Every structure is written in C-alpha cells, then in structure tokens.
Image (tube, rainbow, N blue to C red; front, side, top):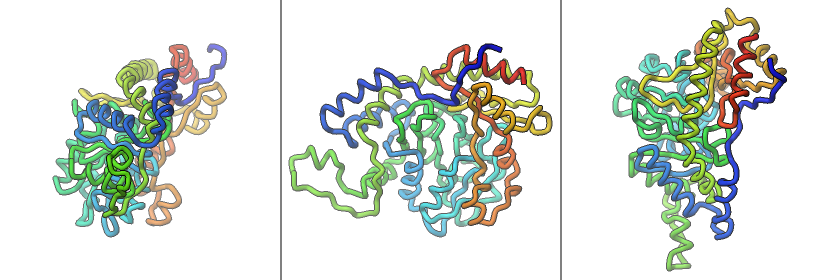
Amino acid sequence: MNTKRNVPIALPVTGEEEWQALREPLMSGWITQGPKVSEFEKTFAAMHNVKNAIAVTSCTTGLHLILSAMNIGEGDEVIVPAFTWVATANVVLYCGATPVFVDVSLESFNIDIDKISEKITSKTKAVIAVHLFGRCAEINRLREKIGSDIKIIEDAACAAGADLYGEKAGSIGDAASFSFHPRKSITTGEGGMVTTNDDALADTMIQMRNHGATISEEQRHRGPKPYLLPDFNMTGFNYRMTDLQGAVGLVQLSKLRRFIKERQDWANYYQSKLSSIEWLNTPTALKDSQHGWQSFVTYVDPDTAPLPRNKLMEKLQDMGIATRPGTHAVHMLSHIKNRFMIDEHDYPVARNCDKSSMAIPLHNRMTSDDFEYVVKALQNI
C-alpha cells in the first residue's frame, strides 16, 4: 500500500464563500433570526418541493417542535425505529409521550414497515420514519400500512437533497426535520430545518419557535410601532436560527446538488471495488430514488469477517482511516432500556446493526487517492 494517509470520517466543505457570506449580517448588525434565515427557508423549501420551511437550532429541536405543534403529549405513543440516533426517541420523551420501538431492516437500516402494524394501538399518534444515512424510508408503503389518521414525521437529519421515487425528502410525510450538523452533506455548524405542506401546522410551529410570540422579531424591530410587544397565547421555545447560520446555509445549499452527485459517484466506486469482500455488505439505494449519501455505512458479517468489527475498526484507525459505528440501537442505551425494561434481544436486527455496522469515510473533501487507500486497506485485510 501507499504511505499511511489520514482519512477523516467526515469533513465539512467550507471556505471563502461561506466566510464572505458572514459579512452582510455582521456589518448590518442583524445577526439573530432575520432576512438571511428567511431567504434560506424559502430557498430550501423550493429545492425540496415543499410549501413551508422553518429554520431551527437543530434537527432535534425541529422534531420536538413538530411533536409539540401536533399536540402529542402524555398518554400518547409514537413509533420510532430501534436503530437510530438517540434524539429520535428523546424528543418523544420531551413531550411526555412514550416511544414504541420497531426493529429495522438489515438491507436498508430503516424501520421495518412490515413490523409496524403489531405495534399500533389506540394511543398511537405518530410514526417517526428515519431516512437513515440518507436513504429514504418508504413513506408510501408506510402510509398504506398505518392509514391516514396516524401522523408520519420524517426524521430527515441525513437526507437533504434525497428523494423517494421523485418525491423530495421533507415533502412526503406530514412534517420533517433536517440537520445541518458538520457531519451532514451541508452544514451551518449546528442548525436544522422543519418542512411541511400543512399551512396551519407551519403557522403553529413558527409561533412556537419564537417563545409562542404572536408577532415575529422582524415585525417588532422593523415595524412602525416601537412600543409593540407580542402576546404569548401558547407555550413556546427559543428555537430560532441566527442570520449568521442562515447566510452560511444559503451558500451551502447552492452546492448541495454537486455534493450529492460527487458522493453518489464515490458510493458507486466503493460498491464496485468492495463487492468482492464477502464479509462486508455495502449499502444500496432504492431504484428510481436519490440516496442522500450522508455516510457510507457497511455491515461486517460477524460469522465470516477475519476480525471482529471493533478490532477491524482499530486496525483501520492504525492505518489512518477513521471509521465509526453506523449509529446505536436506542433500546440498548441505559436510560431507555432501564426505563422501559427492554432486553437487547427484543430488537435483534437493531442489536446486530449496533454491533456490526461500520461507516467508512465518504465526504466531499476526499481525494481519489483517499478513496483508493480505503479500498486497498479493506481488500488487504
């Protein structure tokens, strides 16, 4: 192999354009939520073919905002996949509702739709379908399974720019939340975006995002009545994005299609070059759909791999190649399993994914030499 390289698991692509974009809000003095956030929201909504986009502080607060605006609370149940980031379950707990776990599909890492019906009760108010690692959950099949009375919330943290059979992520369910964390394909540092085609729901979330205020900060500070203060007729939160983030987000959004195209090409490269490694299952995309390729998560077959997954990750780390578990099985986390008396074997596929999934580097700052180095390292093992 070539000389040892350093290949991080992910790096954001930011530079001069993002730096220059910060000048306008910094010079104007309007650095909290304002015109740049508004422009970012409109551009994001247009790109994802959805009527309303609402910028927030993170995907997590976005999901919490959605559940709160849907009046989901104590006594209600929300179905979530057992293999996802902890936030998907935590937001249900924030509302006083109960997360009900469903196992996932090993082929997609997404919620196993065929196992949902048995978990639905009279208390079920919503399903949070996670588009894990950028592959859209099959919302069309999910809707057929659960009917029209139960809300579908897309956890689209990894899915900016993705689509399901031509329908954009964020426009398929009743509402969705995206992430702009630095490990995502586009970033604002922290930050998120909520989308929905339901105007009434959007109006509620816009008000809740700003403490429950009946008028916006722009109306207050740019309007003709300096004495104006809002009424607060509901409990709200401070989930507002800053204009600094909005300015960076606009630049990043202009690059999203190119970023995904590059990731798609390199995902194809990985799939082609790694197909001969029988113990390493590579991720696939749905036909006629756009995978977001937030990350490239493989599955290390514990029965045939030459090393256990963790030892394999350590060996790659020694070679300068960063890896990570795909995510975790939420039902195995202490505060969840102890609270709900769950055994790790209750969701066996999620448990196996927790122990055997492995993300390898895939991001837009990798060179062709980096990709070749990762492939050769795995082939040599």
